[in-house]
Length: 350
Image (cartoon, rainbow, N blue to C red; front, side, top):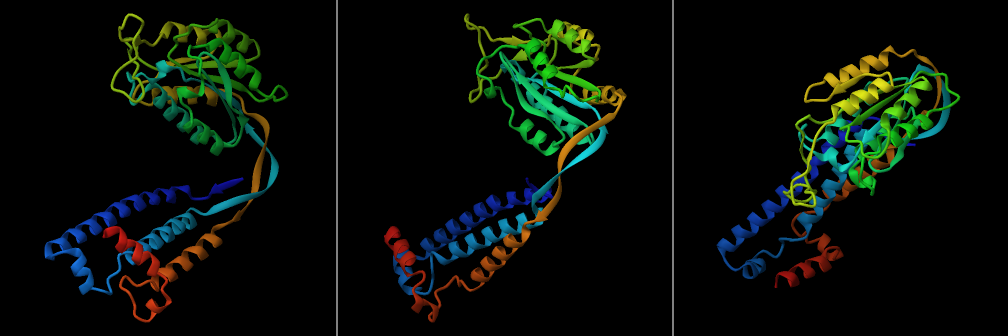
């Protein structure tokens, strides 16, 4: 398994495009200043030692070296062996609605994005628990089998969008049934399902599915996404909204009654999400009430540092960059390393 021990340093990579913009701007301004003095072709003959290619080469080497240094700071590692560990925790499966109605923006930034934020915080809080993920629209499928690998959970969470399921709809009952079957049947750990939806169920009997889950001692908690007054559904890549066959804008409303009935059937709690942390706090409190049991998990127990090769390559590039002069050096020019590039540059400008 590959990972970065300190991934927060990867945010420094945002500096590279910024530096590229600054570099291009300075080059354009430099060319503009040269045109103010006269014909660039004539001026080029008066400055035979000026190179058009070498500054670009130096900048490229610097940026590649910077990229490698950032990777070094992030500490790339490879897991070399696995270990079976025993933990005291619970098993939770997230059932997430990804139908088109979840793109409505009556909750900012959207129902789906708000769901991801809540789930991300839940995953960050987990230590010894196992988590799985089921997504659904007109169909339901397992996005993440139950696991203690929180890094993978966050990765799969970020990739979720309505495009994952072609058939639209809201098959809540099927999703709950799939979640129930996704638990480890041999595990004695306490189990819970956290359903996140706007409650617009059009496919099956979700309440009955929640009751069947409770029969297996699996609580079903529900987070309602949206507002009772609802909101339009934006169409991706446009400024318009989804319309019905009569040309009217479709307004998707939170069906709180359905959400409450599902939570009641599953003997869980219902809470409506808003722009505060109420939903997150309520669900976490309910999960904390569950009895912790011993669960086993396979984890990587030994990681080897892999930064050395990146550091050596960065140092090598910086040494090369140091010996690349922005102006043509008379001694080094005999090697004609940049001769072909110089000619190509002049031919292009001509």
